[in-house]
Length: 250
Image: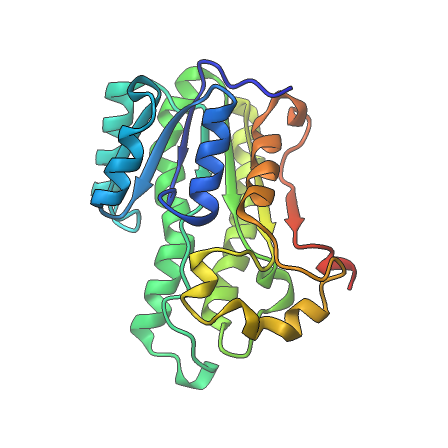
């Protein structure tokens, strides 16, 4: 059904969780995939070594820093010569705190990781996509951009709200270059991202408000990304698809 033969897909933050699941799904459908982490670990390199070398590339770098982002793009260009699909997946809470207790440095880092990274990475990938006269950019946001999130998540919610606005702004500007920009907005997903904050069992109040009464799986988010990157989404632009088990209707 889906084929990404000859296509190069770069997914930021793809050494674990949703990013890794998405990268593996694109590989299964014939894509050439760029895995990314802030640093290369032994575990990452062992995982990559098990894959077909000609179809994968493992890059490292802080995507909140322009020079490091540009270096990654140069590395991708040297190996593959193109970027067909960019998935801006990197994200982090940094530190939870009620609004009056948020430290300036924590606010700045949260905005940098979740929003500035989308700006820097998308901007760096654009020259290749424009040269190709086509491309897809898919930004991973969160349903907290719509709901406001938890009492201690104002910085993260604000950053993800910015990602949604930037997604629509980019969609308007880049459609003339046949570069389609959309977003995927996950709800609660069973990944290390959430487990780092607290065991999933502590999210009982959220489960009660999910019509499907369960947590999502990384592969379910990956499926939505794959669809938006495929030929079947060629008339979709500027949309945010929420994948949250029905929380929009709860």
